[in-house]
Length: 218
Ligand code: MD3
Ligand code: FE
Image 1 (tube, helix red, strand yellow):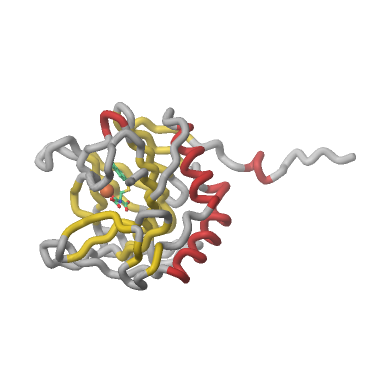
Image 2: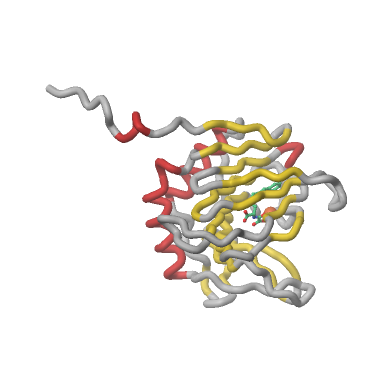
């Protein structure tokens, strides 16, 4: 019998937990062991509901392009922001939430102290170089009790997080491929955004950043 001393698991850096708020955490590299199954599940979702541009109520086009999966998908148009059970591009339900998304979200939330997280909405954003997300609060969800789990893939991003007023000072945190942000409780309604993505090439995702955000919306 040979001892498998260098199995893949043993070579992986353990993920590190960084505290960025009272109940806000970055789990560095937490998604890396799941990257292959995430990528496969993501491809399945996107063949059904592809990324598309969205209009804001103010008449602008968001620079990130979006898709969704799960019971509820986040959409935006001239009438406002909302969660909908139907993909407006196809007039059909959103693709089912992949099991790998659910399992990773529950594990990440648990590692940050939020047990039994069962998301029903998964927003998928793709950012090309130059794309950004202006400071905003996530407040379209029915309740703010559940945390939010956000998985970063591909090109790095500088995440901005502020306070409870748009004018509050912001801190900047770099997010890399495989990092997960978990945010809830007293920090749930903090303003946050993403600075313009810098040009670059990621070995897995190429010229883009993808962010998968899991929420309990209904
Ligand atoms: C902090 N997405 O889709 S995810 C969004 O990277 C969104 O694509 C960004 O903000 C992105 O709404 C940031 C990290 C995140 C998500 C929700 C939060 C941070 C948060 C809610 C409250 C505070
Ligand atoms: Fe947000």
